Image 1 (cartoon, rainbow, N blue to C red):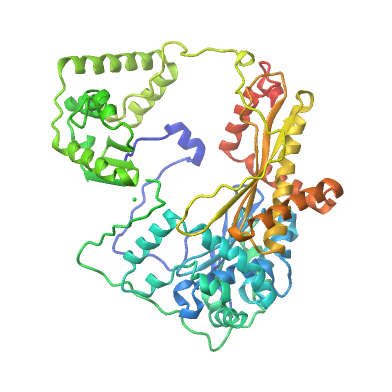
Image 2 (spheres, helix red, strand yellow):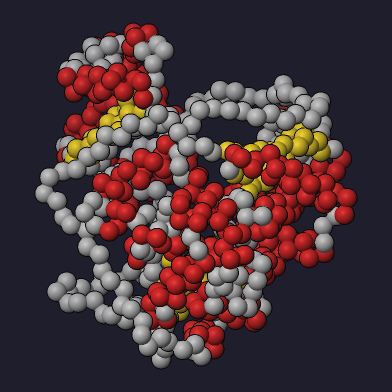
Length: 607
């Protein structure tokens, strides 16, 4: 790996607010404490473990989790996939909440479904996660009460199960592509000889489609015990004691089972011989490969560092595979076989990407990489040296690069390894006024188009996209951009409610706005589109398209409810509050302010 510094020391100080660094004496023979460092840690009388930690960033936010030591490896043959189904049912219905009311409640306080309320099932555990605002006293208590519902009150009825089968099947189907099948094969190879090999968390299609509520309920009551669970709370709390008290309030009255089973351990046997797999996959776009060896630039004396660090550049100019680049380009015409090399601080690496039919060609190139002795001629070296000289001159003309280089010299003892920077051209290569740029030539369809694109696949899948042209008028541009964003969130929420929560036929849906085809001029209208995207069973795709269009038409005719609008605005407001605390958000805002149609020299006014 390369260990080049990504930021200057002053940036690190600002980021972490280090005031002083002190040496710590460590005794490597001493066992680590069982008590987590920096957390309020304990166990309730009923067996539930809790961890609470203060963290002031982001402000007025908390990350909560219910970790359950129950995963797919505990499933019997007729239960394969049930651990994951239980995770889905948790958000569907509990003793206190029904009909996905948990999702609606959490979204009403700004915790968006998927981004801020989600769960994951692995072979060994199931973790329910919430990211919620805590600027109102009751919000944290309500969120912890949701985790308490997950721990023991998940409802498993025939109706609940039927609604979730489609969503789980769509998640299963989404993984049945080339990458998914290859990952599954790799998992079987790694876990060979253990129960893990036959317990992928997604389970079996037959179980997902036919498992009975009784089997699901049996699995839930058999393994979901407080002794197998922990509540984790990290956030901008006033103190940890108040959070612990809330955990005790919502979990303390629950009675632990007296006949609960200990979680068994399933060992993965070791193997002496290396294992490898060769997997033929007809849909793979390109079976990727890489190789590496330890030993890189750090092994070189200073006198050889510069020339060797330029080895890849020099080899690229004269032909690393034994042929000049121009000749090799002709030889590889019609093939997709790309081999690259990298000489890093501690490793030498080659990597390749090719189409399945060109694998032999790619491997021939790898052979040539090792078999060809690259001997540069004087003219080759002269060309590369001219390029390098101009690069160094460009760096020296740039005050910021000079500053960064000096910082690295100071930080790393003037080590030759940390010298240099990104070249900068001596003058602008392209210089245009944004109002004079040519717009991209594109037109919208003039009629409604319905088209089915068919392609042979190993396992049937279907992706659906509904596109609606959008044109925003220049005089109301800034306001309409925001309204378009709010509208996309509203449509996304309603499509998920109808297709997943009501009909149980999709896993998720996304609505996106594209306005990127417009030139950054300060005049003229902006054109683009809003698109609705989801995947589903091919047999129900057309029916789901009609349901989606019906819901959009209903919104046009009736308008959204006040609750719908408040939920969207709450989610956007919470996302905005989070963004204010993130450097990436500010970088993006500043960039957009510079590129805004109303920018005329003053960034603050534009923002």
